[in-house]
Length: 425
Image (cartoon, rainbow, N blue to C red; front, top):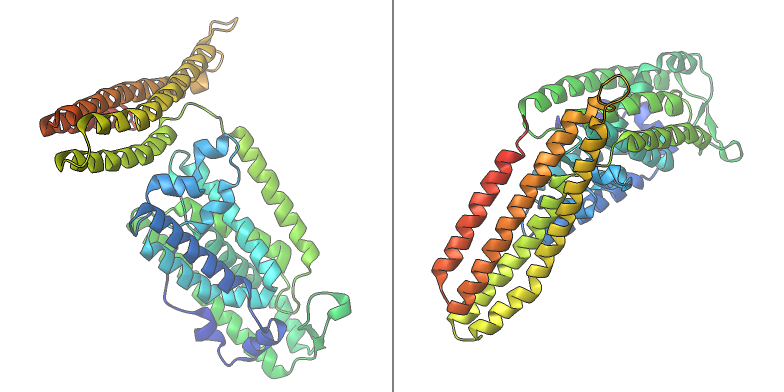
């Protein structure tokens, strides 16, 4: 989540200035910024609708492409991109879209729509990579990495603007065209333009540093703020901003410069994915189970009401549950057994002694022991789920609500046991 200072750098420092007029000449119409806002809002509406609530459920977010370490490690690299278009609630999407509207218009006019969109996406990926390194088992969503990325890009432009300011004050021509030799239009600036740009750069420099201080403090005080994603996106923006747009005050960045940030980001992402070990992961399975089980419980409640009202025979309702629920539970139990075997194999292989009497992979022994313990706890939980659903089937056949209550109590006890077994040390 990106915090918002409610201060628009374009409005407060540039409105009516010669620099603002230059930006409007360079990029008369912004395209990428409103398109990104619309995409974010539509995707949020879809995930909220699929969840039936204003805060999308974790299983829905994972299904739509949230950042999730086990998924990325198993080849779902696209989560590094898709996560930046997902949001966790109304406040999250509102703050991010407001901030994108404020600073996105300015950076897009400065760099051009294509260059802006490219930097937005690659810094969003660098933010996702930093978040993944800091929180490999968490679910990450939000445009914060990309938003801090374009902020870092703007700061790189501002910090490198000193020499360009001297060119303007020396009355050298500047580019207001499309960044291509055959379409370039140059304008010889006036002294007022140079003075106006100096004033704008000073104001932007102050605003950007205030923004950084504010957001670091905000992230430290407010829970669920992914400071790693902010830092990764901002660092990427600084580096890529200097590579691509260090002279953006006097000319629109040539598109050929975008190749290096894109290739560098792809290489870093591939390296991180390669180094992320695919392993038995209970969290991924539990998220999938939550969504499936919620659907089954809703179906059970509807069947119980139908039996109680006489609209469906008890045996028929019980048969519906047996046909729809037990195959799904068994499939999850089969995957659990595969997780348990993989964790056991990893632990056995890592604990094999070498010629010096040391474990061959002693660095990961603790991790593999933890994964095996979690897989066994998950198996115990699923066994309890099997028993609780058998109680529900019996409650339908006998039209006995007490049995359904027993099933719920069994679920609660199994959930508490699983949480205790998988709690971080």
